[in-house]
Length: 333
Image 1 (tube, rainbow, N blue to C red):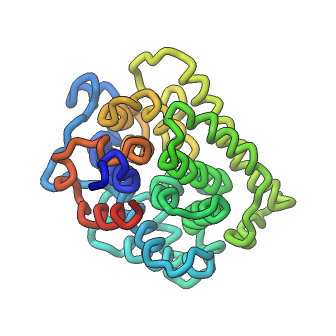
Image 2 (cartoon, one colour; image 1 turned 135 degrees about the horizontal axis):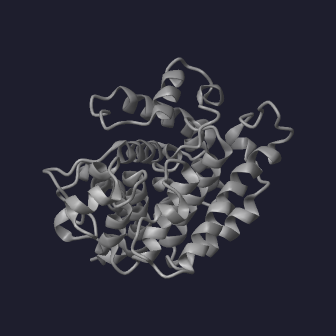
Image 3 (cartoon, one colour; image 1 turned 90 degrees about the vertical axis):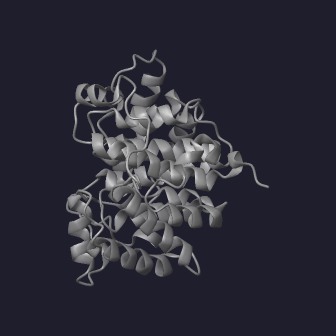
């Protein structure tokens, strides 16, 4: 029998969904209102039968199924599968969870049959780029393939270089945690990765996405994204060097509406509460920013580090899409 602590793919996928569900009702509330409703530590119990998730989990499942059904992990194979899954999500009657406008706009253009480099919202680096990338980090692939897949799935809707870089870092974080990197080590590991990738433009995966007015080279284009990620990682490192005041983590690393801030604020919650996974979710849900995305990514990180043992046993049958999460988790565990 496999220990639940070893089920890191399942732990990460379920953790994402659990955080999403806890952050769903708090996303547009102030911290004071969240604490008034749920107490000083925020929401720590799933609500509803099942507990509903948002577009964050729905789109993560779209990415996961595209990867799961791909006979090979090349851009030529994966892009049409991602496109099909994204378009199915866009027209689904279950797509009624306040979906992001960037994703909807890009999907509308993809549905017209445009090349994805033309369909994407070129100026958007919203957290929709990396709220769904966790499945990429659960694959047993080389790091170049991981990076290409992470950036491709982001680029179909969010064409800004920071959305691409933050998505790669988010997937790399999940990958590293699953391989045994600790949460405490992760900020330094991600900083090293960002520095090493600063001038790497993955043309095989991105094609001519870089060609914009005022941009001279592919390297100039992608460096902007990595520089913005490095800046927020510095903020994260500085915050972790200070005592935890128990307040809104968004004050240190941003509200999470954009991709690099969603990554950093989720990591801040995960590292602060590495020994209490449910508290990491609750901390992410008790924010003035994009609470569902922050809590979802915090759950993905803690679950990748600790496996299914991180989560209350009674939750597994109470979360929406439990059957899909279980099937995909088992396939990658």
